[in-house]
Length: 293
Image (cartoon, rainbow, N blue to C red; front, top):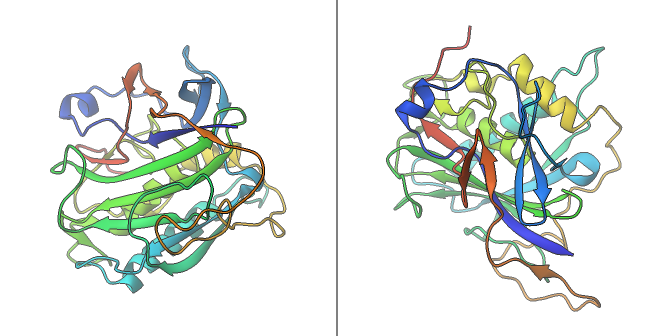
């Protein structure tokens, strides 16, 4: 079984890129195009759409938050924001009173505080805050990054890690909002579910965030259409959210002895958004954003 790393999200917080973004609205799902790259499937359809949309098999997964949390945000506040985001996506309106076939579970605190996916041991879909330094380019205009590991044959998501940029002023609550952590993680949970960026400027999955804004906490009809297409209403009460090969609270746990083999590519799959190519795409960017009406 071939595996590949792919970072799901936006390229950069370029004012030009945002200013000249198309006005057409429509969600996009991250998908597989060929064995060595990924792409998108959008609504309305685009000329370069391709592939099998990525999704969690069975419609369920569980995340875990690094117990050290953040100097700005104690564990309780970060957990509250993540739970709110998970509830928001799970409660999307799919019409006729139906909800997406989703079950998102909070596995609580874990000791591990680094992004990783283990081929032969347990895993955790980790939520981390980098307080001291953002370990990637664009520290001044990037709020978060989500990394998704998936099966190149089927599009099944195996792992999703969310990293928050704690070098900016993350805030929780409705007063004195700077960079609203609930808005940011609601956007990022969309990426963890396999959704790419939307061209709808009112959508939570739009590319840019305006400081002080809290409207991303609430899904737009476009967001709801996207998640309902990816996770059609279904009974998920019996699905198992346990990470692949079991929940591992420690980083780089001991390997599990099992028959067979697994392979991993040494380079991340390419993601294509609006004709742009990149080996790694960032999750939530600063920039101009139309206020939700």
